[in-house]
Image (cartoon, rainbow, N blue to C red):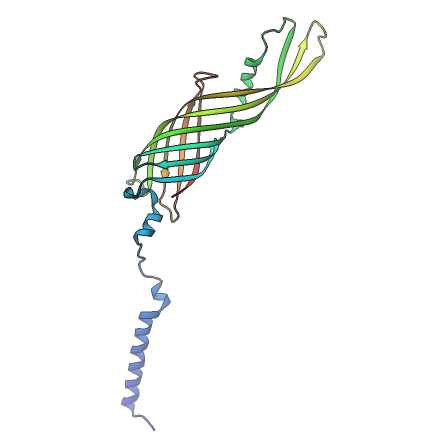
Length: 237
């Protein structure tokens, strides 16, 4: 059966219209350019620290710098938080300080002809714990998810040092010296002040932070101050 020319034209138009509707409805190419809709659950994941109605939060992570530490933070509300860091100090940054401390361990019973000379030292362990109370405020005008913070806290330090030395007694042998070593345990503590900022607008529930601290010794070497600080990441939940 042969179709007339008008019949063929009608069939072509019907097929073209059907194909057009199919492309609009099902084309993966066109669907790839749709504007994404972010529901409330995803919004909370993208910016976990900005949901004011969902405090408190907790964060657990790692801090790199001086000191290298495991870091925990309790976000009580939008402005107040408590941070606890436990880790190891960067002993290499304290080489000069520990070397100068050698003189404080010399015995008072040395005779005039006797002397002890410093040769070297090594930090066998250098651990610390600190707790900080923080006040934080939003800096969304600069960047969404950004917060500044400042606070005060207390730091406890425990360091075990090994010193190598040479001992000379001029009354016995002016040229020959004896070599030896001894260890000292330094346990001290003091206040710490901190300033920093934290950024939390990621696709994962994490926050990144940078902070600078000033530690002041209050026990072994009162008044001694040291700048500390580092960068880190925390998983927020």
